[in-house]
Image 1 (spheres, rainbow, N blue to C red):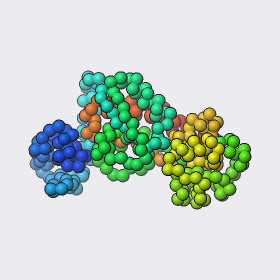
Image 2: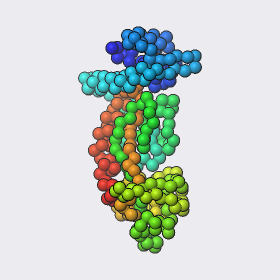
Image 3: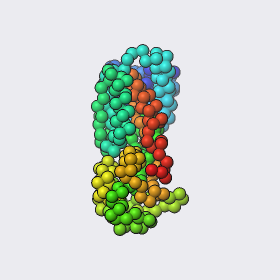
Image 4: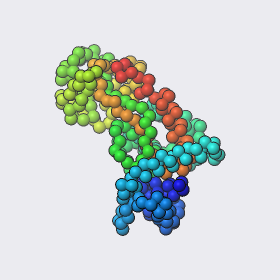
Length: 301
């Protein structure tokens, strides 16, 4: 099977049509259409339903696209291994991540990457919404939580939990709650006012009490906890340094919420650029080996 045709087909799916795929691949739209048609003829089945407004996968196309992603990705990895990074990675790299994900560990990783690859420039887009990385021309994103089905590649890099934390100063004044019910007597800060499910072994507790402070940014909840404003429900990834230094301590440490998986997400077509593959390889190596969520026990601090 022609790998180029598979790559063109994958690009049409990822970019949502022949015109955008043509623009991204730098080839005439007629060539893109011809290669996909030839691929369909070779397989003896229609992969795409084409209309004047949109292109949609057939059932066979959906199945074949999943295989295409894997084959194109593995072929690209083999090519890179043989070429051994013949050309030095260079250019601008756009990386998206949630605001709360920009923790010291990630900052250190970005710093080390820039030192290793002096010809690469990075633009980081901090946003809590789920960006359309293809439409917004973002090379890679770090994402938290379960992912919807999509044409993107998601590489798991770890997981995290939401923990109850407070400053020693707050607890000295207000006392340390001994049960979840006692949280009703405290100023609790979290990212939503909706009921939340925290677990302790096989036991589940529904946190229903109205929070004193609701903030849709985990980093700010963390900072307010450091300021002794109240007890915060924050990710271990955000609180790890404060917990290690003693600036914050766990509250009801046997309870937590999660786990929430973390992924590095990108489009398979992005693997055609050495700057992207260089970052993927570097990030996976660093994150899996050194990330704070892989070093902290769920029950520990």
